[in-house]
Amino acid sequence: MVQAMNLVEPSPGDTESPSPRVGDVAVALRDAVVLLRRTMHGRPEDGAPASLLASLLRIGPVRATDLAERTCLDRSTVSRHLRHLEESGFVERRPDPDDGRAALLHVSPSGREHSAAHFAGTVAALETALASWTAADITTLTALLRRLSDDLENS
Figure 1 (cartoon, rainbow, N blue to C red):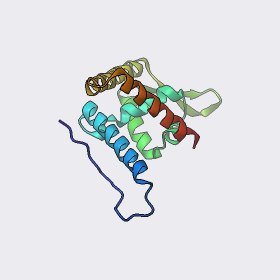
Figure 2 (cartoon, one colour):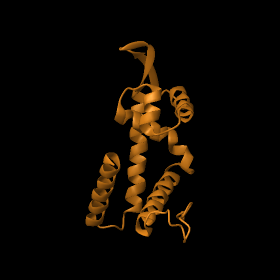
Figure 3 (cartoon, rainbow, N blue to C red):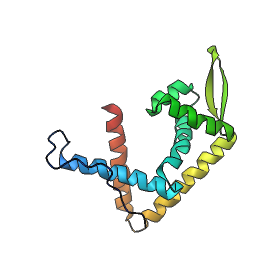
Figure 4 (cartoon, one colour):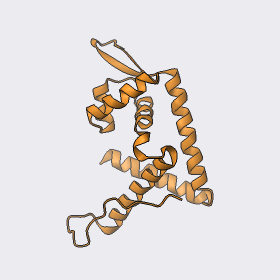
């Protein structure tokens, strides 16, 4: 069984930390994401190319620099993962119709299949983890996570 990790906790006398409840949310959210990634990939960092591919699917064809900006990742990190995704045949570069000097990144058909399989694995891992939860609890979690995402997007 995988144990939750508390990687960085606010120190007890730290007056610059958010309120304890918000700090608890930050730790719990981070732990849940790390544990889900570990369940899916063995190590949290193994999921980075898959996450970037899923982001490209959501965002649509974009330049590599725009993908880095939209995903809040360093350009060198995005470049490294894109190289892996291109070598795997999951991402293609095509000329930008508005600027012939630039290229747009597109998810290939095999990239779509890979992303769908990865998503199915995520759903299966969550189904296992949430098997003892009530439908009402799952509905509440979903609503609260969507609300958090909306508030983060709009803040």
